[in-house]
Length: 122
Image (cartoon, rainbow, N blue to C red; front, side):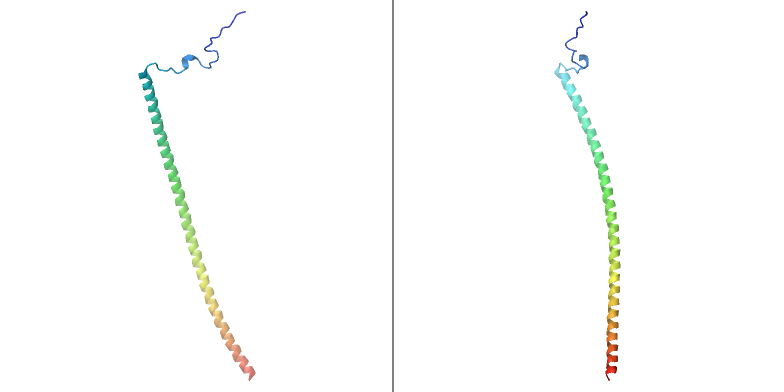
């Protein structure tokens, strides 16, 4: 029987050791790596800030559009309400005119009935 030997380093490892990131030995190399990563982070933040600003501007435009649409609808409704108020005022004036006319007619009829009643009593 042949024995199969497995290296202890690679037995439970899913990737080979040569693909693992290398830790820099010198402090100069580590500071260069950090500055590159901080540069990429700051450029990433800059990109995120630009994207966020663009999103905020787009949202602001949408909100302004919705507000102007809402203001237009309110203005139209106010115009309709004003026309209804004018129509109701006209109806009240007409009703008042008819009421005054009927009061005059009633008074005229009362006077006529008084004349007729007086002539019948004589």
